[in-house]
Length: 190
Image (cartoon, rainbow, N blue to C red; front, top):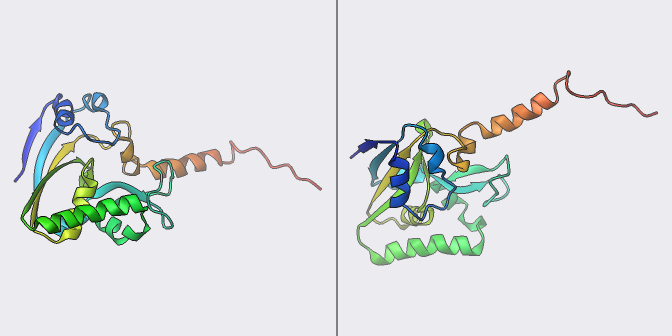
């Protein structure tokens, strides 16, 4: 089931509906563009596993900082695969949500906000722990994503820097800084 609305005030209404979004979403910048809100329902754990989370990792470390140019966003399935590498507080939070859903033992209905990444899928704006816990629990569920469709641009949401060319911009800046006409000649010492 998909339902869309298109309005310049949609971003503000979206944030009123989900006031606990902890990512740095800038509704005043999004309002300059045409945005829409779409609701999508998912019932398969495999589909949940493909959602991107707010967590980032390098090959050697999970919970890497956003400023680290080598940190990649983790999908729910990747987060679960590396759950033992998380700090105790975060790991306990994920496992507590899983245990809660298992203990309830009934069909779960959850709604979480997400940002549309185009062909790359969805980035969870909130509900990372609930979605991951639901993925691990193995109970029947219906997860409704309230998807904000707006330009994929880090000026709207800093966490989009991976998708709007963040790492490519980093390497391009290095390449430009080392081109022959910019770099000073090296001094040779005897």
